[in-house]
Length: 590
Image (tube, rainbow, N blue to C red; front, side, top):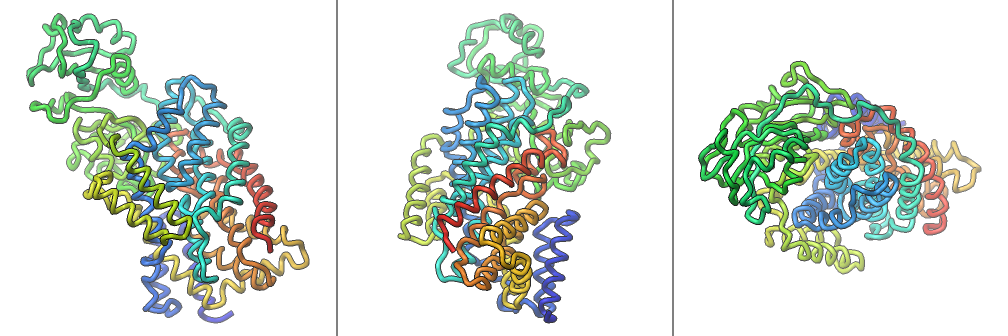
């Protein structure tokens, strides 16, 4: 073993150890390793930042912007509104949500697909009176599975395609992953929908507990087309009692009316001042078809509860709150936002909330000014769990957004244009058409992922150049010496899956893909089946909440514990291996 190999193996070991420790964010760990590699001379200075201009890095960033455009245009909401029904049985709901999530994640980033569907799933669970944990894990797994089917569905596929281009001169195309990844996804979705969800442990405390949280004040507006116009406020008392809310008064033309307002006939744009818990407020608003307050109202309600709304959000990995407290980030004085409650793995935290260090997956109950909910969630980098009533979609541009994206996918699939260029043109078109506002263009890119990719790609290239991947592949080939090809592929998949369950799947792919190519060269066979095996295995992180971002996102909202994932995840990973190996050998023969 050479000195360069020893240094690189040490660096990769340190990276994996730090990622497992979780004390520092993965992008900082990867960038520090890259800089160390440059200083120690194992990564050439001229190649230090080559990963940031790598096609894989650019595609990941562009896919996130395109995904945001599809959401903002209402293209995805159009699908979910059509297909989702709270009256269905749990099994039918999981089947349909899983199918929708799988299809969406094949054509948009799978994290973005889950971010879109998770609020829908939680609201459906509440309406059906069941725990969100019964359906959130199946949804997360479905979006991970769906991403296997296309080039842009998940970062591992993008990386695999780029590595193939560098090694063999030609990348995988858009739907080259479909025969294997699609079969694995279909088999996995069938298991999740029919059997897997029954293996999820259930707990009585697996939902957000707000018993000790006091009532809150909110303002709900009477729309111009409302059937309530002409009715007296006193006539709404039955609906208010049913929803367990208190109507405190009325705001009309900027003037507040309280006790005497009970006999006032309602007019369009009147605002009801209501005291209620979050769930009761939402039920009352839905029952009477009221809307949130007009952002242009001349008189804003004051800090005593008027003109505010309550939102539930989940802390995302790498967000402004991840690892920090509300007091540390200045939530109150910077955003006029109050932290009302925290739910962590199904258990509510009630003492010193503002000083509690928050974690990825925590659910937060926030009291925010009425006209700043969208700004607050964007500033914090958190994911809203309920409809905020904000006009964030451009329904008139839904078909334009779909057409532009479909055209780009078709052109790239037929080889008419290079995929990064096609996606770049879609982003430009989305900005010109104001589907994605220019001011938000860069906010949708997950910069920690970009830094991770940009840092790990040069390290992976250095490991390959130094002969490190040849050593690893030689060990695996020696382990499977004399065994049939399907055993060799199975060993590679199991090793890759194991790494992906505890590490970032991007880092796993960067290391495992060159090893697969080297194994193929050692055996004197085609490298394509080995690359496909790595692509499927790197995406199959179902045993832990840390292997994939989607699993982390559902940890708090589902009330899960660390050990809950393997119950459905282990048989799912076994199924993926069992169906993928024959598919790989059939569609990508040695």
